[in-house]
Image (cartoon, helix red, strand yellow):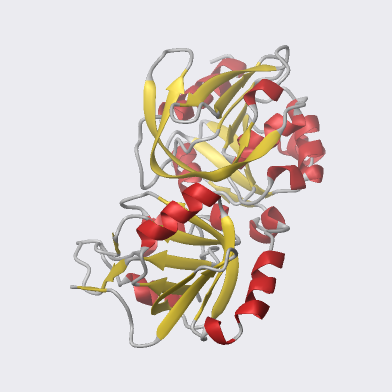
Length: 369
């Protein structure tokens, strides 16, 4: 059993003036955000709880969402950071042995305003052709005050993203048998990054985004992880300066997504905003060292410009098979490697989980094991 719309109407209006009329889904109200789409067939709960979506209204391209329900274990963070949610159709009677509730109730619990029953194919084509744009979801009639709402939509921008999602204090997560200690910078990290490290024998110390090199030195970890996160990477000038100092400590570094971008900026590289980004669990990535192509999970709107990395500093290790954008960097002067995609993908392909093993091996080599 599934549902196209509720009895109450809802509207999606884009910055170009297009209006989509559908049904109210989740919490009623009005939200403004950057409208993006993700192509994942599964993993909708992970999407809703991924802090990288802070400030964004997320549209699912797959037409039926919620068929296996939701459960507490699949949350990637303690709350949802999306501004709004768009689906074609949501399932009112999910079926799965792990199911603890339906997606509509999940949205209500997390105060997420959504819309269902619209033509998501048309919406996705609009974004692909025109690029990511701002929009508004509302249960009020947009046609009655369209001009005023358009002004608000066009004035919106995602700001202070990392500081809005990072944890305010340090937390430690220990494995049953500790082998190494890893400092995980919380730029908006997904819990599965922590889980992948813990199951490999790493005690994970999650630290706030603005943690300094001196504070890291006092912890004396075996490795450093720069996590994923939201927003324009170039906005984080203080963090970028910190990363430059942190990498001088000589401790092995592994960066994912935003962490990859910030590391590049700290080393003289530059980033660019993509037309509509890479979001979904089916992005092909070529490993330039092995020649192998991996299917990866991704969620980002910005990319490192590979040619901007000074050749004496690092080299591009992975590229996107579709648009040839930079997907990974191996650094030559510091003990670091970074990737744009998510090797911890959950849900998503596990093709690149071996990168966590390589990170652990790097720590072992430094420890003389």
